[in-house]
Amino acid sequence: MRSQTFAFDVYGTLVDPLEMSQHLQMMVGEKAGVLSKLWREKQVEYAFRRGLMGRYEPFNVCTLQALEYALEVTGLSLSDEQQTFLMGQYQQLEAYADVIPGIESLRAQGHYCVAFSNGPADKVKALLNNAGVLELLDDVISVDEIQRYKPDPAVYLHLLKRSGSQSGNTWLISSNSWDVMGAKHAGLNAAWIQRDPAAVFDFWDIYPDKTVNSLQYLAEAFSINNGYE
Image (cartoon, rainbow, N blue to C red; front, side):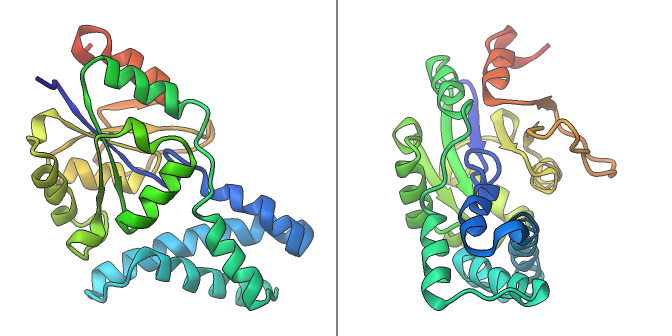
């Protein structure tokens, strides 16, 4: 009998999307960091916009459109072949060093672990398989199944339905504060993975139940008194 359900955000929590800057550096040199950061920001923003407008498109569409915008703003140019290569590299992102041991520890404690992403399930599965994480998970749950985007409350309720869990024993695990806040607003528990020590949680009146800097520390927290201090 499982004690808790852990739903892991993927981009920025299990794998690092800013890793794309390494590929961009080979293409645009010193402007790679700026381009990579803007690309990621617009990727998330476009999903937000489409969610609010009720004009859903799969996350890879948001990703490509965000790249095109970022190139236009920075005055940079990439060939169609280079853009196709970059989109393909989104399936090759590496897992953070703490991810595999952290999930292994949670599974060893008897917890149910799923990926929960804005990305389409087939692409997320391919990404996590390449990163060596997929085999550790019980399921992959995508917003694509209901064609809504985080942080819409309907998305988190879909997570509960798909995982067969109750809100009281379900944890959203994310490095994105807006994702944590969305889960909390929908009645779930949530932990914020503060990967960047300089990162500041959003100044709203919604706070994570736990804040840790790695999945290993998260697993350690749940090994003590079943996760409650």
